[in-house]
Length: 363
Length: 241
Image 1 (cartoon, each protein chain N blue to C red):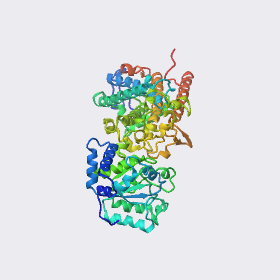
Image 2 (cartoon, rainbow over the protein chains, first blue to last red):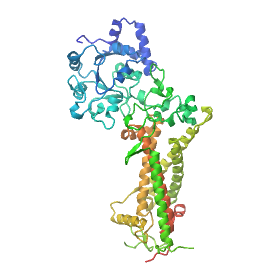
Image 3 (cartoon, rainbow over the protein chains, first blue to last red):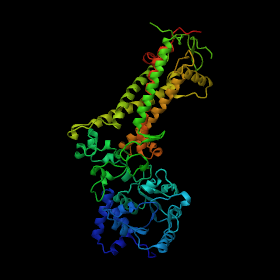
Image 4 (cartoon, chains in turn blue, red):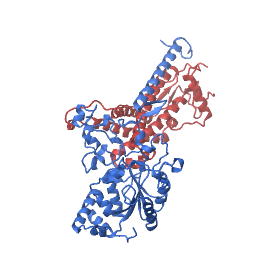
């Protein structure tokens, strides 16, 4: 730290990368972001003129699966992101510095790049016991988070934890873990949900912010539209089997071998917004449905609390029993029908026995 | 309660007056048309909706040979559109039509007479009173359940169009108009679950609606079933003073 702020291009050339490779990289990034014909030039121009954006990557209650995913990004390679596109000034899981040295970087970034750095948050803060369930550098994580968010330009919420709360916020949520938008209220937050999010989605979001110097267009729930505006189901390669009415009825049945739709096996693709069915995972190798398992909806709000991973509808817990909407509906309709039948019976008996003198039986 | 309606024993809760006729024209043609179109829509929607939730057994052969779920969903969406347009039309008709056209959109809980009528009607259904009161429009219990159905249909239309917008896309007018549903239920799975429960709520309404119509037609000495066909409510004459 302390060195003058370099542009991306200067850093890239300093690393011995040729102009030719640089242009190739710009084209690839532009293509992966779907930026159209002039995209590559825009990316190149941005990288040549703009200083690298400092990024602070903090970890709250989480499992580091977001980081694990991030470092597997293939387009662009994470090496390019970390070493060329951004200035990753702080990330306690992968940085060399430790202890007070590492903590000093946070303060330094706050002072030097006030209002100019991106705060990327993996995990979330627990609020119970004044945040004592997540201590980071001797202080509750929630305090550090608020402090760093206050001077940031924008906040990226990595994964289901930071976006929705994920498993630590699932019922009964003993630590009172909350998504970061419950404690950071005055900064724009980009939610990149998933458990973990897709690597290329993560680097794509970073690439967009760096290239254009602004946040991508977000949907109603704060997710970037370019990756989260369609459901898994909408772009699933098994969708024709759904429309045809061809389903897997049981694991390992003929339909499963033929790759039919997993709708009846509780695939949550129809209610899950993510880019898995287009971008896929591990450099486009596969994604859950391609491997024969339904989507579990990991990028959706409270996906741990929505019943089994193999039910498309949420079970309703009432009166101490868990039942799905059909069971409840059929039971209720049956009870009402039985009640009406009894009512009709009583009515008939009263008429026949002359209780109902008002309307003498006819015929 | 006053018997000022001119028809012996008939209560007109709106202004306590009714023409001195045994027959009153209650349900105008657009109301009847709406009723039967809605009946058709709800039937199609309930059956196709259930099949979307629990699809028929899997088909074999080439996917391109079939379009079963596609047709089921198409029928569901089409019927949903007709139902929604019908309800909007019915709401407009509430302003244009006769005073009985307004009844199902307003629940007069502030009206003491209506409340006492509701209590009386509930007693009637619980066999606690011997004679039912006669109403030109809906009796208070029927009025309340119709009002409930309107709310239920609004709920089903909002959640239905919200889910339709998921396929139609973020740029669709359906999303612009009904996307707010996802601010209430961030996870679409909840919208699906509640929409599915709504199906059963409507089934329960239909059971009660048909039962009450048949029962009152027989017992309350006024026409019910033929009224929604002809529009006329006939009061039978053997009320005992």
